Picture 1 (spheres, rainbow, N blue to C red):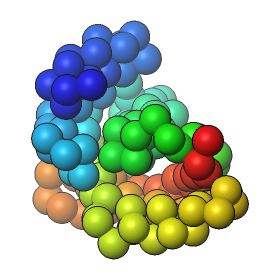
Picture 2: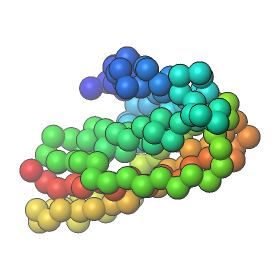
Picture 3: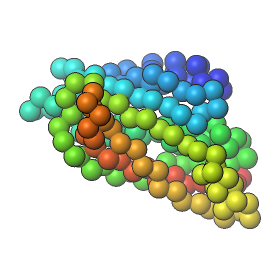
Picture 4: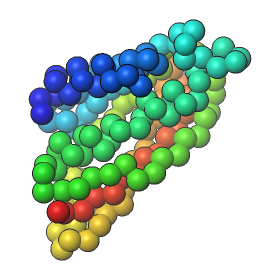
Length: 146
């Protein structure tokens, strides 16, 4: 799938569209992706800051989708687990930047070459407009060859 097509589809996906989550960039090789979310009346919590569920949703499928595109059809990739550590209240526009390097891809290919499964913990920070970390998120990917 072309990155522009995937970005378009994700931005229309109801859980993202409904919370204001927008994919603003996907690299041609799927190694880099940026997601943003403004603070709106419909995605804030009782005390007026970003709802934690929306912050978590901002990070949910992206490492998995990127890795599926990078590794291709010979691999099974699942988003196995996720944790979120809230660091400060999210106000204004928040952003998460996902990066998958070539070295990680090669490590996963080597680890799964004999049919074994591979679990990789992938960290990502959600930052505010000042660059302060609002939440630290880890996503655990399950990868194996078909």
